[in-house]
Image 1 (cartoon, each protein chain N blue to C red):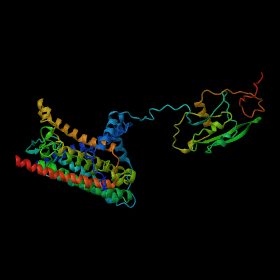
Image 2 (image 1 turned 180 degrees about the vertical axis):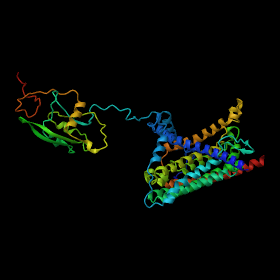
Image 3 (image 1 turned 30 degrees about the vertical axis):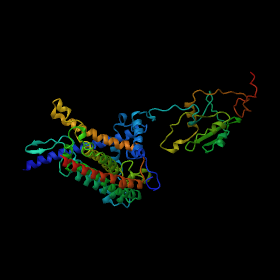
Image 4 (image 1 turned 90 degrees about the horizontal axis):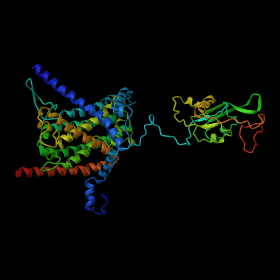
Length: 188
Length: 359
């Protein structure tokens, strides 16, 4: 309005608003009202924490049955499902039981994990779980390369209630310890 | 003879030490207050960790800056790089020498007259402050140039142009008050505003200096490189402007200089326009209850209230306004502020002349 010659003349009220910095005063009133009605939205994080949602996807863990045996059968499906190649499984035969397998070694490189939960979905025996832990900041990145014992320990402290182990099939033919619905219950 | 000189020196040094202490403490308070006030205005809390409600944050900042590594960039001019923060800091602190903090009393100690609330009542006080405020611009420009960094140089250049343009307006805005008071001494100017609050030069007849006050406040915000005129240190454009390459204690000096400069211009504004240490009523309440020897407390409190209100205005503007573009800054300074200041001088001069002819 200042530069173009064809601009309309300012009306009296506009002129008055300009010389009294009306817009700036409106803005200053807004900031002052926030100062007087002081309601901070800040959460003082280390001292107070917000409640997590029920479906929170936190740190991954390996689970056990109620008798303390590992659920994992070493099928490598989690490794296949992982989009970030976090998981590495070394599968092996259970000694003495040629049809049964377990994970001899199990590694998770949590520096790459994006917490999508696809490994948990892929697991046929529900051996993986997501906990509600999220404060995993460390000084050394190598501390985030977790092995099987560490993952089992996370599972132990996050899932105190364990699933009951069912022996539904003959041990020699049981590939997965899964309660298939179409399989008739075991006669006693 | 020697003892007289020694006594004079001791009194002056005591006064200087006291004023320095007050200024540094005010700066400490300001660093915390700015972060707190900004936080509250933006629905945040501000610093909360160090001490209860974060009140020890300035000390934590000071300790951190003190122990930081002192880095001189490669290719920097070491001498000028070292001198720049000191050049910035000293003129600012020197300016406080002529600010009257309290009543214009005079004591006699062994035949030496002492004014307790002003270090030196020189008769060109305002000129002295303006002269040293301009010197501080050298610190900024040289600091930006000596860093051997394009961001620093750009910040320094912007600052040079900005400080020169807006110091002109500061000087012209003050002239109206000088015409009314007929003196350049801050003590005399403050004394002339005694009585009710309509004797303050912002309201005083025959020529209220309200426009000059607005021009002065806007111009000193620009001169101290504060938001919305913080182009020299625009952090989203120039990293940090002229002190990009500074760290540790030298950065602390620049920081101290900026805040001390804010305190100085607020003190000058309250002394020139808002009646200085005079309350908004004649005399003091302490005199009414018969404690006239303690009335200086009330007077200094009035001075502090006025100064801190102006400092709060600085924070308030910072919380409200976005940064100006460079051409907007220059156009506002030269095409809006300067004509208003000049017109104010003309109107004030004519009004004072007519007033004197009538009386």
